[in-house]
Image (cartoon, helix red, strand yellow):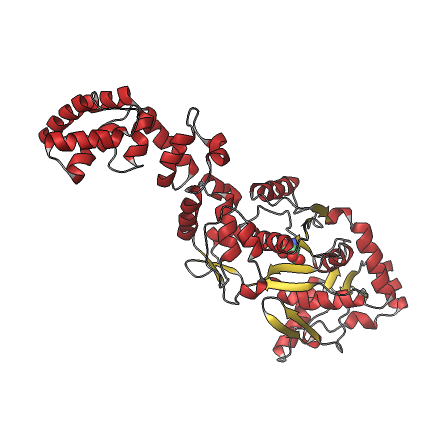
Length: 442
Ligand code: GLU
């Protein structure tokens, strides 16, 4: 059974990069008939905030990607303690006491000698007596994971292909701070084992973490999950700007972007598959495969999102949007107005045009004379069928006008605008009396 997890830290709102990671995890789980788990990485009580946890849940719900289960790292500290103790017994974690300043100095010396700034494992040489003395001096240890330098790190990444790291070039990572708090690396690996995560899908900024975590899985005697590291997102301008990094669900919602547009875009950018305006997710799920993902950065473009959103809005059924439409706006009105919308919210503008009043622009004498005739003709036509075609046909016959000269003054008088929804659909919504009133008023 495929199990994926989306593991945000509740230190802020989800941004577009996080949303993409969530979407990829969700799609893959759905494609495999598996489970999608939300893991709240809240080991850091100081930086985490309950409001952000609620916002993360809300964002996933808005995307219609409610997780199949939720776990919180803050509820699992006893598991981390137990695993740390086991790893300590096995000699795979060890206590160290260097201060940040001391470590910094060591790094500088190494760099000065042209050596890689890898932790020198000085703490491994400490004896029980040393530990006792340091403890008596009031020192508290942090814990490092001891990498196995003889075990080359290799995996076949579902997106990046074969990956290889030399553990000898990496520092033994600190997994627990002297104050007892946990760093991200080990708890995440423990959770992936104990929650039976089969596939870790995340951004390529985690590739070197994966290298370290693969040794943690091995040290725990657990088979590692598969890994898929997606290339990072960049803005249309070429890099992940501050602005893009701060865009989240609130922004998209306020801009009238539909969840389906976000999902359709973020599911496909960075892949060889076309971005398509899917309202229904079934094809996105059915066609999802890591083999389609490339290694080049995925470009996120607001303009592309806005266009995709419009194409999605044009497909939405009345029932899908009814609760967001102005009172009185029915299915016929939605169907008439929908092709003109970039966002659902814009429907209210057009509904205001239907219900009036509208401010008609100024007309020249010729058009005014034409509209006087139009008001008279409008009173004589059959309004029960297709009044727009009845009106324009009668006016063509009566005035000899054609094309723009025939249609545009009517559109302007009726809607106050030069462009908009198909008048044949709009006119019945405006209705006979209001329409005649608007034409006669100019
Ligand atoms: N909390 C980590 C992050 O936000 C999770 C990384 C992971 O997926 O393991 O980057």
